[in-house]
Length: 118
Image (cartoon, rainbow, N blue to C red; front, side, top):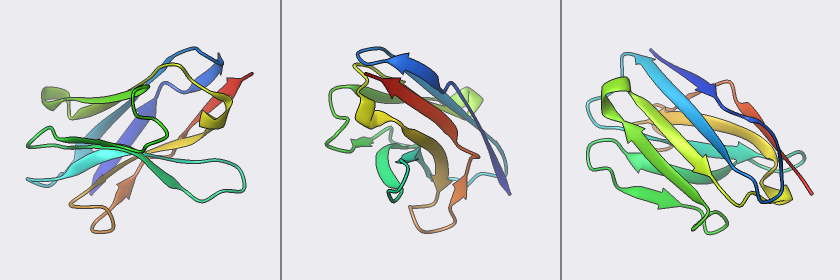
């Protein structure tokens, strides 16, 4: 089993920054992906960003490219999401996930609220 512990959400004004953290513990896979999805009220969960753990290759949704940066600390099994130039439309519950690949052996954190005021 994998446990994911998220932190770092909160309330920020438009144009501000936040950094989310997600620490994985338990039995992870030898090759996996970690990343972030988000869900706004009344909308489906959507992909934000992920990172391939062994290669460090990153991916971003078009809506966050150039504003968000994902990174990892291998020693701590922790992934970070630095969010800059936040917009009200970034308001959502952000979920950290870990999987062999998305849709295969997924594990999720409890979610952390990010609210961006205009």
